[in-house]
Image 1 (cartoon, rainbow, N blue to C red):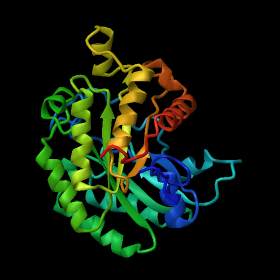
Image 2: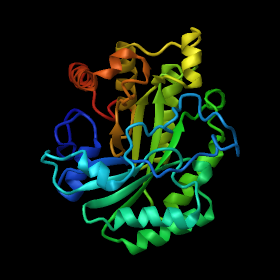
Image 3: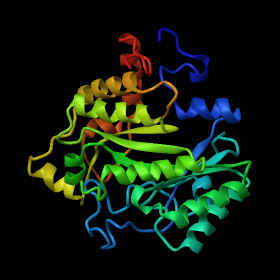
Image 4: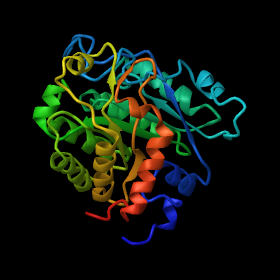
Length: 306
């Protein structure tokens, strides 16, 4: 691929921003929400400690308590009236069914919301949840429902180290069930996990090319205070990626990723007060500028090395 497709809106990869502009003809802004749920990896069903990297906020450290609170954060900015309600904190299909239905419907009924994105675990998508999602999808044909699944890696040894709590076939069943009812899936992958070489990370990307989800999030491994990963880091057993190593790995992943898969994220944000490492990741603008420069200099486009 030598030429950037017009649909990518000038970036060397198919970003969420480009997808929204192509599909809805306007930019959409995500509002991260905390629906006050928990997780089977925290409430004792599987474990009480959570995944090794997960903070006390359940990966929703920037999440708002309500849609109105989230929308208010954009006050004074010219962002329009098109928001994606992102249920981010903890596991957002893990709770009483009536409550889940209520929060989904309340978000979809909001006049400024164009759709919802539900962050969850593959082992929390039983038949009742699948039926609920299918029903709600039919009830709101002018809006979308996406589901975000935290895969992180296809390698079981690394998944066990991070205490993911489910094997790969569980992910595959959840993905198949969601695909069957037409719910687009966004898969989360963490870059920089201990035990993951570039080759092993690219095996996860190649696996995703094979199943072809709607979207992928590539997330830098952050080390946050008061997590078990922080203890490993402070004991010298875990070393975060340098900026240069992360950009090199990220470029390899982008080059290997199928060009039709929407790239929803290429880095990540750790809450400033809680972030232990890597310190360079605090400057997100610099990371993105450095990435785009490296992609340009090296002539890399999404899918150019498939």
